[in-house]
Image (cartoon, rainbow, N blue to C red; front, side):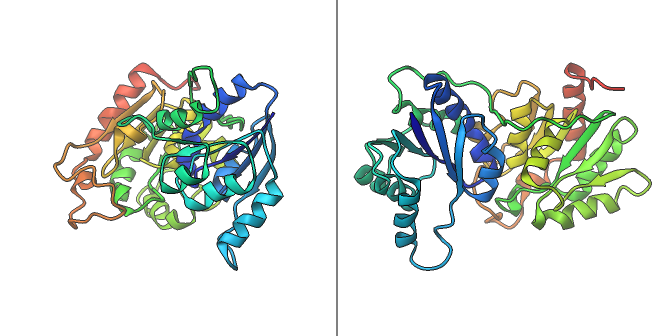
Length: 327
């Protein structure tokens, strides 16, 4: 049994697809997976024990993308079944041109024309459940999904360790204030080693937090980790404070106690999946969730109005139930 899986592009979305991937592998224990995705999604998920081939989708690079997609489909070849977690014309074409007989994806005009199972997920629902609804079409057995799963061992720290993630790749509207992150970190610096995380475009925010923590030992990983390193370092944390972001879902995969700060996004759809150690801090505003990359009203109140004291209180609630295990 060979299964072709087109992963979501974003790190968090890719991690949210893992319960569907895991349950398909439990239904088809002999399955050999071929994973296709962005560099980020492949680097996070290529370590799955049933992944036999993996490819970064580079069909947008140079030349005609339709021709590139057709050629790529011939490299992939026919599988027994295939699923795309992207709602994208070229992904539907990739599955169609691979000549795989059983194909599934989210319902759209192109998937209706090109795929055997164009699925409309139940809504409103968590994105994990929407992915499950699409995957269900590949099995006659009910798919009972579990936790998020990343097959990268967590790092083992010697002391209790707090991670701070001030970035959010989707856009500035999802980012909390750097000064407030620093205030929260300062509150717990006597009990935890402090680590800062961020992608290449978030180095400035991490550096600003570090500059506000003078006299406190801080390890700044922003822009310095590979995706597997990022997953491993987050997986070993005792506590994580983050915006709604890909690293937030990585933390959920490892069950890390997490305080997540939400503003313009739908928390019911993209909150940490099945992480009992997580707390969301958000404010109910008439304009939220707007789902915009930048605040369309120019005030950014959904994030600006959240105080450091609120996040500190949320941390206290987390620690009351899940204190650090190392001293």
